[in-house]
Length: 88
Image: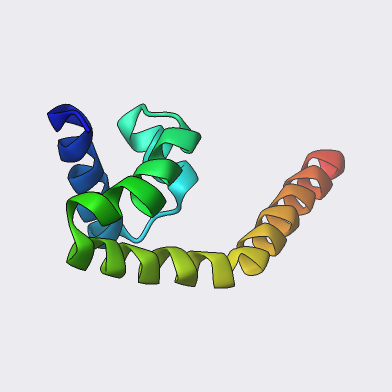
């Protein structure tokens, strides 16, 4: 594995732990694709830094466990803005 990929994996892992953001949000923040961020955090990081990979896995598991709540909130906001626009 190339050194720049190793550094990217560690940087993404540390950023995920600091912010607790989703993979999609990290991808947007860093400019990498969602697929690259996910692969770096779930597969490559284990080879580079095992303790960091375990911490990252906990954050990813938490985000996965609450994703149904995030989706519901997004739908609620979408419909609230549509109803507001209709009333104007």
